[in-house]
Length: 66
Image 1: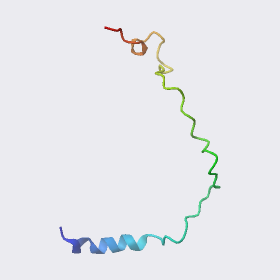
Image 2 (image 1 turned 45 degrees about the vertical axis):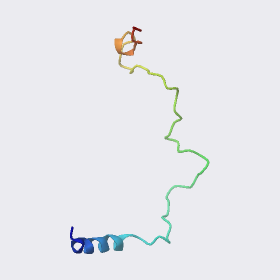
Image 3 (image 1 turned 90 degrees about the vertical axis):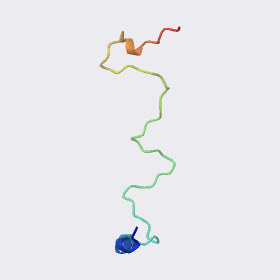
Image 4 (image 1 turned 90 degrees about the horizontal axis):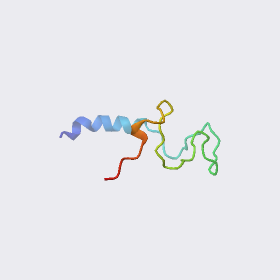
């Protein structure tokens, strides 16, 4: 590979990054103890049929033991 071909690209990318000393301002208040409201705790790991599928669907039944 030719490093000289990418030398200018590397300098351009490094020049566009902000200094690390400046923290990024956050528009949301920091709440370390409270989880985000859109995340729900996981429920029990059980295969549940889709709402649109009938209860007698063979895909939701246990396979026969051989």
